[in-house]
Length: 226
Ligand code: ADP
Ligand code: ADP
Image (cartoon, rainbow, N blue to C red; front, side, top):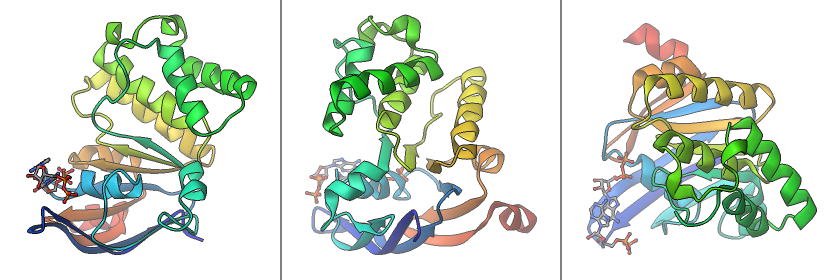
C-alpha cells in the first residue's frame, strides 16, 4: 500500500474559490517526496486536509490504506504533521509541549517521557526542555514542531514549508536530520516553493499550480527537463 494516496481531492473555500481542483497523487512508503509550487498553489490546503484540520469538498485521502474519514484514528497514528505556523502555547515549557502531544496520541506516560526526551535530544532542544517556548529562537521553535510531530514515531512525516524563514545554517542541519530519519525508514513529504530544497532532498516531486498538479515525476527527470 502507498504511504499516502490522494484521489480527486477538491477544496472550495466559501462556496466559490476552488483552491484544489481535483488533485490525485500517490507517495510510496519510504519515499522522500516534494510538493513544489508557488505561493497560493494549494499546498497548505492539501496538508490541512490530510491532517483533518481543513474540511475537503470532495475526494479521498488514505494513509497506509486508512481512509481519513472512516478510519481517522488509524490514519492519525501513522501521521506526523509539522504545520507552517507555530501552533503551540508560547507559555508552556518545551518538554511539556512534546509530552502533551504524546498524550494526544495515547502514549502511556512512561513511554511518552522516553520518546519526548529522545526527540528533544535529537533535535538539540534538551538544554531548553524546561524553558517556556516563547524564549526559543525561530529555528528552535521549528525544531520543537518536528520533535512534537515525531513523538509517536509515525511512519509518515509531513512538513509544510519546513525551512521558510530559517537561516542557511539551520536549513542545512534540518535537511541533514530529515535525510537521516528518511534513511531510517520514515516516509517524508514536504511542501516547498524552493526548487533547491526539493532538489537537494527529494526523490519524487509533484508540482502544483493554482490547484492543479501539473507534473508528477522523479526529481531526476524533472531536472533533466528544466
Ligand atoms: P470553509 O468554511 O469553506 O472551509 P474557512 O472556514 O477555512 O472556509 O474560511 C472562512 C473564510 O475565511 C474564507 O471564506 C475567507 O474569506 C477567509 N480566509 C481565511 N484564510 C484565508 C486565506 N488564506 N486567503 C483568503 N481568505 C481566507
Ligand atoms: P500554498 O500553501 O500553496 O501557498 P494555500 O493552500 O495556502 O496555498 O492557498 C491556496 C489558495 O486558497 C490561495 O489562493 C489562498 O488564498 C486560498 N485560501 C487558503 N485558505 C483559505 C481560506 N481559509 N479561505 C479562502 N481562501 C483560502
